Image (cartoon, rainbow, N blue to C red; front, side):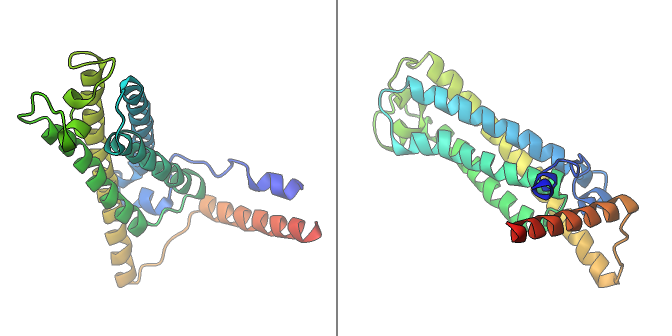
Length: 216
């Protein structure tokens, strides 16, 4: 069982993240920090969305979807991304680019819908306007209370999240193009001693884990 315990340690943790990202440029080296900020923003959005929903007396699917589900998806996307950057230190840039584009679209469309629903809608008593605009959300906040404050903050943080995903996607694209160029040029990856030691330890821990499981 000692082997299993050693396998789940945090000895591989490093803010430098994936060496391929770190070596591409000083800009892409900051990818773990960007993902960490995105994780914090997603938690803020979930907290604000929950607070907003508590004030409502008339819940609809779009309200729940945009205030809880989308930020929740963002949160559960950033956790494995942080794990890949900081612990595994192996984050596939193509996958990061694909996920980044998807979340850019989601985090942009959500606040745009919320803003558009309030255009020329003083009452917003039905349809999409009622679901997306704070004026159409009956509750304790009312038109001038907490509903508007949270509504506008959700929009701001959603746009910030979209920008963050855009930055991370651009980083992933740069890393992908750099690795592609290295492959075309036939440049072999130079592994530093620290990375070699990390890979050896990872292989050793995996071997110990497998032998421990076989011995059960």
